[in-house]
Image (cartoon, rainbow, N blue to C red):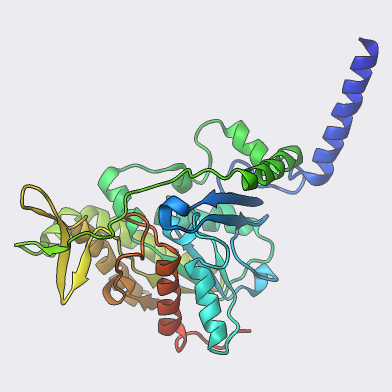
Length: 351
């Protein structure tokens, strides 16, 4: 028993030494923040969109994409899951495509992805207090916010997820270990290697491909929806103004981009929806999201940011989404190339 005790004590000493040297305990760390860091996970996407096994990576700062120095990022993209794109492999996200499209047109523009699943402008604002100051030297030239869907969801449900709180609301000790422990990091690396051999599908949603899109007898009452959502839209406008101020406080310019969902289509100026058995047409919350998009553009013009009305200019078709929100690689490429075309003459020459 004495020998066992001595060996356990030595093992514990080695573990503690490894934690002190390689862990995040001494350098400020990320505390209990829910920002995924040092992630390399495989996902099986065959049943989502036929993509096979793809890899999702985020670096030690919690960022996705390729860059040499946080101080030399040209565009930092923030948003929710439609920006993070967890099931779109490396090199195929819309942020990747945006950088690629700039390169194809003779400009090297570094685009880095800071999307967080489920985050609304409430969480975006907290990024500037709790996350971005922890990234040494972070100084992007532009911050592109791809937003609207999650803020509408917050208005509709009143629910704030942990991504908006930015810190684990429960089991904080576990998040603290995840963010700082070198031993846990080693475990996660080994687990990722094992998962690469046995990747399981953990996400599947019904998509809308093949829907016989139909125009409703009465088009959406946008003015009525704006009146119904007025308090939420006012609060959203206030957060957008504060977000633009935070972005400029970081030394960057703001780019605000509106969003679509895949639960409706717009053709020839008409909103089309999914026909229901009782004869009604489901337009998938088009009116509510349109109200938030209208507010985004109004505030964008007021604060003199760069305004991109993707929801009013880019239209999706079958094969562009694998569920009601998230794009396939085909849809992501469409977004990235659209954004490059809209921004190429608005961005000043990169460093």
